[in-house]
Image 1 (tube, rainbow, N blue to C red):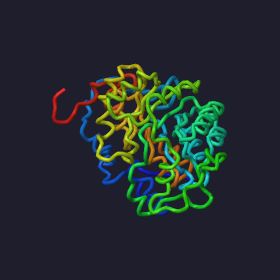
Image 2: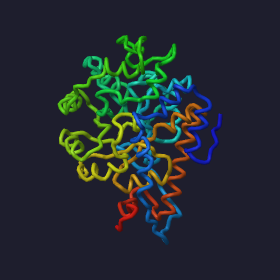
Image 3: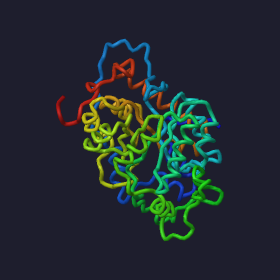
Image 4: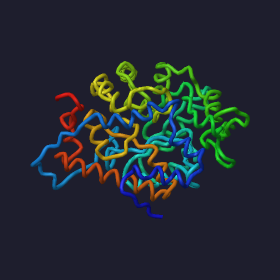
Length: 364
């Protein structure tokens, strides 16, 4: 089924009309008052673009690399949970659509299809996002399974000692419907949500099973058991960015978990320059959070991001059009990035630098 639209902002309301209310709230919602959720989007309005003219942009190239992997554009698919809530093929359909668009998917631990099923769906580059369970043997097994399935990097989420208070999920008593579970931990018998709960079953699951004691020593441990690069996702400060590179990580994702963890943080684009300055080129820096336009991508790259990751629009597209919908969203973003590059006078990704942007209200 073809998915037609003018821009990504249209997709959310269309998906809202199609999927159950609790599922929509789970995907769209943020923590507490959703201040961080709003700030992620608002941050893009605080930067203006500085277009250059009379530049030959008759030929343009949106391609780049992330950790040495070639991608068609500096836009990746962020790790998000429970794709099976919106499409029967779940993450397998997402993987197919991502590969068709020539970019990279980050598969979540909290997926409704196994990492092996996702890997078998299509021959394409992919990373594996890792939550650390209290059961370290289970966690180590996930790492080794990802390596055997040819995932090319591990993406450790570090901002989730507890799940943020997602009040919509509490009111909805969010849980997975019968027939869906966390497929990657089925062998350990941990695929189901708790049956008795007063609020979000997923929040209770995370509190009971995920490890809130993680420290930088555990980053060292992960690197010691992994033969592939390690990325940390959830960095929002220069202090933590410096610690991350001091501990030898290969990449950092500036992220506040889509506004779903600690509320009242900065928007991720606001945090990006501080992180880039602290890293000083020792690791690749990526960003997620409310990327909806090609101009958003341009701003993030100008402020030092190697690439951005997109989450919610992928799920809306998956709900509306399956793997073809996922591809349509990514192809559209590539079109918008290409268009913005042309109008800004930047014919290639490598030509995008800090001079492309200016904070509103302040001179360069």
